Image (cartoon, rainbow, N blue to C red; front, side, top):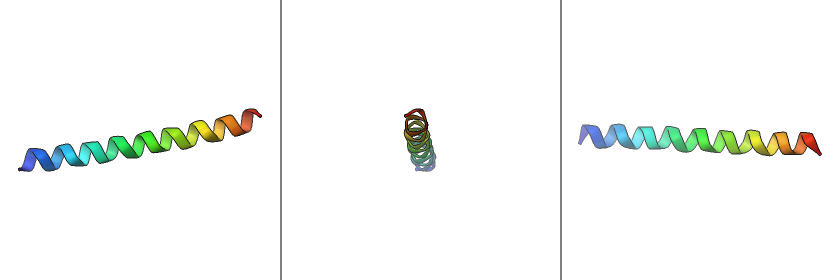
Length: 33
């Protein structure tokens, strides 16, 4: 049970990092235009 909770927290952090990377990429694309 504890390991599953840890995996869920890691997945949540990975999702957040992916979202931040997407936002950063969009911002970079806008700056390039």
